[in-house]
Amino acid sequence: MKVWVWADVTPDGPAPSALELLTKARDLGDDVAAVALGPGAKDAAAALGEHGASTVFASDDEVFVNHLAQPATAALAGLVEEHSPDLILFPSSYEARDVAGRLQIRTGSTLMANATDVLDAEHARTEILGGTKIVDVELRGPSPKLVLVRPQSFVAEPSGGTADVVEVLADVPDELKTAERVERHEEEASGPRLESAKVVVSGGRGLGGPEAFEQLDKLAAAIGNAAVGASRAAVDAGWVPYSYQIGQTGKTVKPEVYLCAGISGALQHLVGMKGAKRIVAITKDPDAPILKIADLGVVGDLFKVVPALTEEIEKRRTGS
Amino acid sequence: MNVVVLTKWVPEPEGTPKIGDDGFLVREGDGALDPGDEYGLEAALQLVETAGDGEVTLISMGPEVAHAALQRGLAMGAHKGVRITDDGLRGADALVTAKVLTAAIERQEFDLVIGGVESTDGYTGTVPAAIAELLGVPSLTFARGFHVSDGTITIERQTAAGYDTVTSPLPAVVTVTSGATEPRYPSLKGVMAAKSKPVETLTVSDLGLSAEDVTATQTVTSVSDAPPKQGGEVVEFDDSTSARIADLLAEAKVI
Image 1 (cartoon, rainbow over the protein chains, first blue to last red):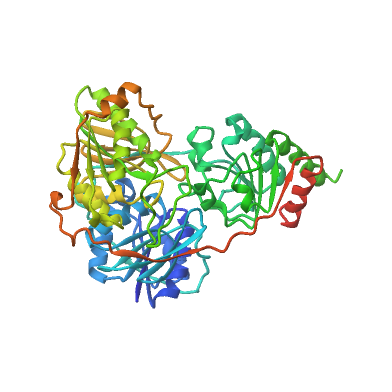
Image 2: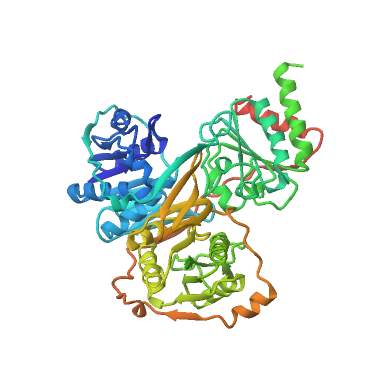
């Protein structure tokens, strides 16, 4: 079976999702390839090969990142027509969702989103209602089947292989280049990345405003190797940037400890953090759903609990 | 400036969704306009108001109860609605949904099609891009800010690290994030006026689509309960709480 992986790449390297999906693709098929389009693609080929791609269809051309999804869709559709893969795994990133949604129209094939596991080219699995129900889905119709997989559904493991790099031509017609990215703005949070931090400290509606996030920053600093996140309610309110958001529409985190304050535990949030090894929830609402999944739930005023905890950790650190 | 807004009726957004014996989400009873669609509708209303002419048209695919979603949108200020209701659409997947909505959009004059980033019940998030591909226009997804001038739309497109400024000629498909706008609350006058605004009801064949066109290519084969996560202990905050949490952090070897 031919299994392809859509690999998000940047000049800094392949996205973790690409390596996770290739690791899974190795289990599913005997002929695994990755498609990587945009600056950094060819440099990423070694890592992609090491994780199971025997071929990497690659182009470093900026046309694939400067005009949204249309050029990449056209190139991918051309490759699909030439090589007839049975299954393509996509990450749940902004670009991949758009490319998959468009490719589906070109190929007439089925597309499943939010998969948490893939069993074979016709069967995939998802979790709904905040992970309380497991849904098995059968995929039919023309190949390739297209499956968008949730982040961190698989653990990336190298297999030690190498990949042949096949150049993808960047001769994109002008009519697919009418949309244009004219500027990029980075507003990255300081400290460790949310996805790789050992501890995530996050806040929600209960914080009441942006100032309260300073309390969480102090707690995260006291813990060390901790990142600060937020629920959608806090992001929608404009208290912190979207890059903080954890949940269905934000990031998925699986830290050693997830410590949240003022978050009730909406299904949309649980999806993004229920994989944490330990969950500590601080809330003033004794009926908050988050308490049902917390290893330790604290019912109380977060403006008392968080500073007290910060002080306790600092005290232990200095040994006084 | 004519804007089509994709509107979805979803089961009561604050309630606990129910799954029927057939594995489908139960789509009856209480429900509402998807809260995620209100940001896009607000964007559409602002764009048409700024342009000073044109109409906002709501298009919704769903059962008869979906009428409530259209009424809400009309009460907020949309000019007219189109509802596609057909038993053949039960269990429609993303591809079918995109085909049906596109066929309905093509019957309208439009400069922009606006939708939410993803629905609150299905979370698929690929339908707007699929519609754009069918229409042969750019798809500007994840807009957290937007403006239109001289036939060009400029958006702030949310990215993992911040945002990109993206421009596109019209027509285009745009998806709007929650928080991009502050949806207005329908006035009593708006609610009254909504009752007399035109709503066209269409079937699949009215759209020139065949039963084959709207056959889903994915089926739920089973729904089962995930193994419940064992809840732990819940305590009231007191003088010993900080030490308890710190002990847990120490056990996890993170402090």
